[in-house]
Length: 219
Length: 216
Image (tube, rainbow over all chains, first blue to last red; front, side, top):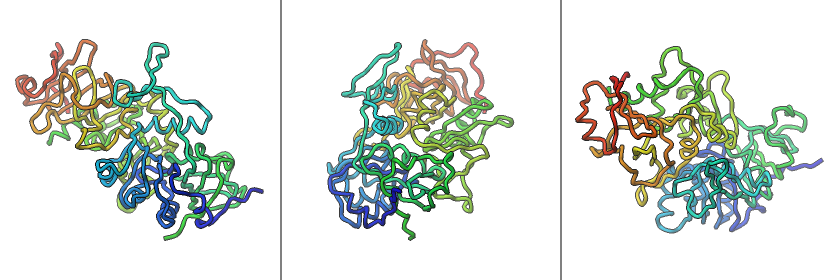
């Protein structure tokens, strides 16, 4: 039996300065806030964060930006967090903007062992700059490279002790794909259930992708 | 009726029964309020579901259920949640019938700019680039001018969201279709003269032989 349940303090040891971290969530919805707080408490810095967006200054990834723990973000949107824009303009934070669908596919590509993806998104825009263009059946595509991380921080709804995970409503978003594309995957669960309690037909993330499970902290 | 409502009402008439539709943030979201009687569409929300319902009342707010702008919403019976890769598979793979987006600029070739004003406003493209490339029909819903200056141009000056993907432009003054032969004015709003359209549109356009009064 692989018993993956840990405390926040135990998984804190895994997250180190300078790492590349994928963080699930969409404007903070579906972000494992307890793991974000852990990074803040532990003083980890110089992170490269891969996420959909930088949320709000007081929510999700936004808290890491506000507290200057991040040296680079790879995201699709920063408009809801003025602090991200301020740090970018001041040269304190590197921002790589990626179309949202391309971001999802680049993450999925690494998790799926693919060397890249071909997408029509961004052709004829500044997104194509510096990228290889490939024509297939008369249509032009951009070659986009896979994205991987040292650690993925995922928020699950119900998670069994083998790591089998289901999500809740729109809190799913990037979480399942990020769980496939990092060296170590930590799931923060709203609820932890016994092995066998989840119907195998409804599991979204198979437990084999999950390395550690922590229980969501009650505030 | 203000300009935004006129635009939203007109765009709503483009929606057909059974369409899968993605509405952008702001004015495009208003389109959902004016969907004609008897027409049922399935709203797609790029943060990961189809079957989006109305805005949530205060007692219905669920922190795990928002639209792509972060506002609490509801879902209809038959809704379905999925991850971001599936959400953009739907978008990019041509499974969205219509997307409605706002614009900073749009031009006579169907180029659209709506995600960045370099040096001023850099919110990021979010899902807009994928939507404009992937949806079967792209409708730009916007006010005809910004502070009196035309937004329908010969050539966009801002960085593009996508090249040559816009199919239709709806403003409070009229409706344009983007064709291979260029921009065609197909409808004109009540009380708006051709002189007014010409004076507030930088782009070259022709007037349809079947020019109609814009229905709202």
